[in-house]
Length: 409
Ligand SMILES: *Cc1c(COP(=O)(O)O)cnc(C)c1O
Image (cartoon, rainbow, N blue to C red; front, side, top):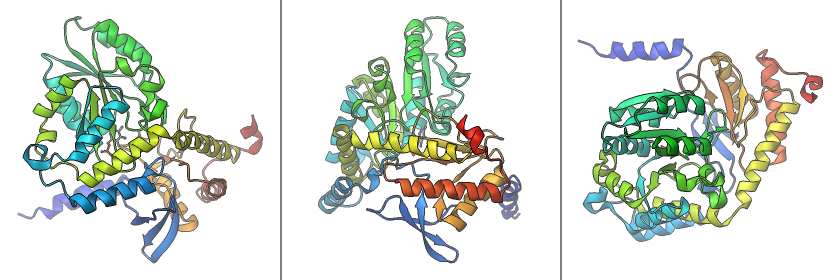
C-alpha cells in the first residue's frame, strides 16, 4: 500500500481552494524594526513588515535582548526539564509573580505558548467543575475552540459579542449548574472589543465563571498595559485572564492569571502544563523585562494608537476599503481569496511590503482581507508608501477604490 497519495490529494485540495499557505522566508533586523530581509527566490531583498504581531516592537527592545543574553550566558539555553522534573527556574518564578501583579490576581501560571494555555487551561478548569457548561463566543480563537472541545462537556456558542444571546443561553440553565463564559477581549481579525462589563454583569447575575483571552490587548491597553478588562474597570470581576508573551511582549510563552486555588489546581491537573519542558530561563527573563518596561512606560501605547489612527486615515483618504475598527488592527477588505493572495504577492514582489493574506478558515469565506498591524515604528514615510503601494495593487487587480469625493463624505 502506498500512502503518499493521501497526502498529495489533501494538498491538491488546498491548492484548488486557493488555501495553500506559502511562508515568506524573512530575517528580522533588530534595531531596524519593521525592516527585514526577505530571502526571495532571487536572493535577499529588503522589505517592510506590516503584519507583525510583535505589536510594539518589544522583541527588539535593548532591555529585552540584553535580559535574554545575560540570562542565557549565566543559566544556559534550555530549562532542563518539565516543571516537575527540574525545570522550574528562578526567572520563571519571577515572571509568574510579575504576571499575577500585572493582572491584579493572586497567582499566574506560565505555559509554553498562548495556544497551549487555552488548549489545556480551559478543559482543566471546566473539568474540575461538576457538570459544567461552557459558553463560548462564536469568534473565539482556534486555541479556545480546541480547549472547549477537549473539555468534553456541554458547550453553547453565543453569537459574537451578542450579550442578548449570551443571556438567553445563561437563563436556560438552572442557576446551580456551573457555567464558564469564555471570550476574547479583542478579536484580532476585525479589531473589535468585547462588551466586558456587560458580560461580567451577566456572569454575576447567572452565577458564571469568566475566562478572558487578553492575547491581543495585554501590554497594549489599560493602565500599565494590564489589558482591556483593566481599562474597563472590570479586572476584579474576571476569574481567569489568559494571555501570551509572544505578541506585545515580543517573546514566547502563554499564561493564565487567577486566584491562588485556580492556578494551583491547573498546575496540578493540566496535562499540557505537566508533561512538557518549561520555557528557557532566558525567554522568561526577556518577557519579564518587556512586561516591566511596558508597565512603567506609556509612550509605546500612545504612539501605537496614534500610528494606527494615522494608517486608517491615510488609507481611507486614498479610497481603500478599510474596515472600521476601534483598535490597533487595520483590516483592508478584499473579499476574494485569489485576489487577496495576489495582492499580498504583488505588495511583496513589486513594493517590498510584506502583508500576509488572511483567508478562510481564519476568517469567514467572502471576507478575505489584508490585516495591517501598524507599530510605533511605522513612520509617516512608511505609511504613505504603503498607501501608494496598495492603490497600485488595487488598480492592477481591478479591485474597487472609492473616489476621493466619496471618501471625504
Ligand atoms: C495568537 C493567539 C493565541 C495563541 O498565542 P501564542 O502565544 O501565539 O500561542 C491565543 N489566543 C488568540 C486570540 C490569539 O490570537
